[in-house]
Image 1 (cartoon, helix red, strand yellow):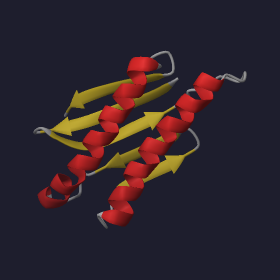
Image 2 (cartoon, rainbow, N blue to C red):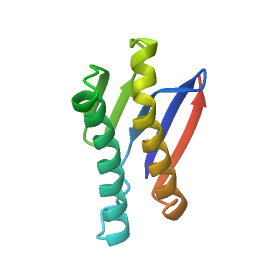
Image 3 (cartoon, rainbow, N blue to C red):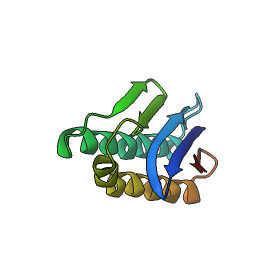
Image 4 (cartoon, helix red, strand yellow):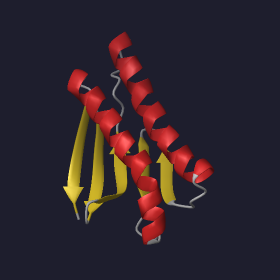
Length: 110
């Protein structure tokens, strides 16, 4: 299962952590597609922040793990990231609605 936790402060998303794999060892097309969708949404969000918005954020990416934080960013840059992060949250929630056995999405106020 993939676990995703978004962090919100003063009505602004300021980061997320995601870990785990949606796919078990056996071949299952639904699970493989779910895992690919989760990866595509999350990595596209990161690329959008880095390459389109040109904001140098703190992030870490490894096999089965991705985290991003905006803690050291200006209020202006946090605001600029909101459309991408909110879209990521909604996309992952949509996947969770259909494939809740493979992904869990949480939102934590910090």
